[in-house]
Length: 278
Image 1 (cartoon, helix red, strand yellow):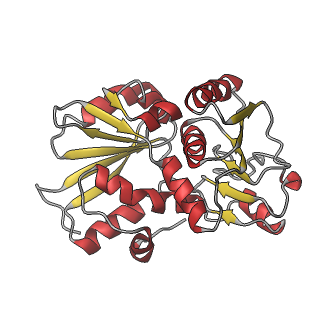
Image 2: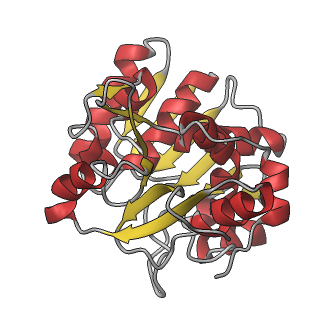
């Protein structure tokens, strides 16, 4: 890959960075397509993140930022403009500099997740879903599932206030949607999603009681530590169809590329050129 004085940089910001997979997808694509751009991981902890985000955009060759855990919710209060999707989700994972120099934020995690499950034959319309985890990624998935037409949406988070706040935003924007909080029991749902960090480290507990998941339930994961996490392995053992964490990445990257003003492509082509390592 040619890196020179004209290289455009996308900052991939989060902590910790050892689970990052996006550079292994974007950068091989840029090289194959002859795009003079680069995704660079930046390990930034919460206390310094607000100052870091603002400072990184003082660099003229930084065209955008991919924001991941634990900063997606914090970013909402650090940008000048937000899309309706980001407002409902209460989180933001994409930041760019607007034509007027102001920082603009959007959220693509949910769209990537929903595109992925649709490709695998799961139609969200009229279905029931449980999303465990109401942080940045969980809020985004819940918002996109609501937009996609689920009829019943249950939310659970160890921080009850986070789940309740998300439920309030969903009820405001989707008054016909049945929204529940307070339980991570997966029994009776058409779709269940682990949107927590559980699975990033060995010996993490399960995000829900897998024995309560019906074999016909579709199971989704957001953790990128391994392709098949312990949670997904247990769900597959019960006969469930599953979506791995990286599928959400592949499906949302074409939208990201358009957002940052770069040549876009398809999720299929990205899979062909990606060099993901676990």
